[in-house]
Image (cartoon, rainbow, N blue to C red):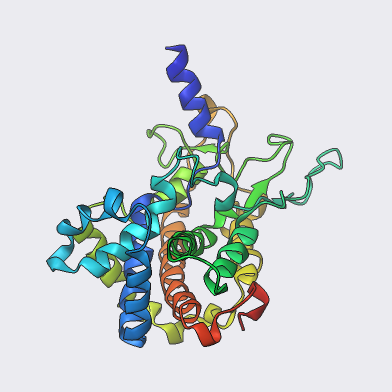
Length: 317
């Protein structure tokens, strides 16, 4: 009983992956469709590099047999997008701090005694720049490039989950709520308490079935409101802008409702979400996952085109 309680507490307060694994698969599926249509040569190069991944045979090759309609390349994109979650606990590959950055949000009216610390320098922004560098270096091996590609797949998805760029600091959470992981809510009055982070993670899709993921990606991508021309955010080309100008703003304005959203550090007293919160959150999450898929396709296209491969995030314009 004590062990189970400790495990539950760890899940409630520790950083976890942005979106669930299936959500990352949706992002990968959207990127696959976009890249294959826009630049078949770049698409083929990404597939070639992913096949050089040191865990290709161990983790992916057999699962490719379950690809919807036999589209093994699409399935490979979906598996690459979730790889950084699949290898949690694998010391050779897992990098826990790469999934997020804790930009502090201290709402108006909080006392001066609440003093948020600066974010850790080892974070998602540094990870993105590092892995882009690996892809652009001539001395990088094919295996190193494949691993870096998988991280880029995942980090672009992570960057679009608002709770992966923020930590709320209030009198209730004087040390921060760790991206909503310590912020307990109930989706409905009679529902079990969950973290706000988990609530947002699960907004895209609730199954890892490859065909369902593929269909969800198609449905989201083809919505008129999700056409590239209807997404002015795509003018922001820098990864840092996606974090600070977009996701952090959404975290403050939408996720925490400018500090007015009620939550609890204690699951036993977790309040239920306002009745209008879920539809607003779902629409934002869907828009964010589509943006992540489009941007992932764009990043991959440039990253594998050697004549245009960026050396740092400052080159993305």
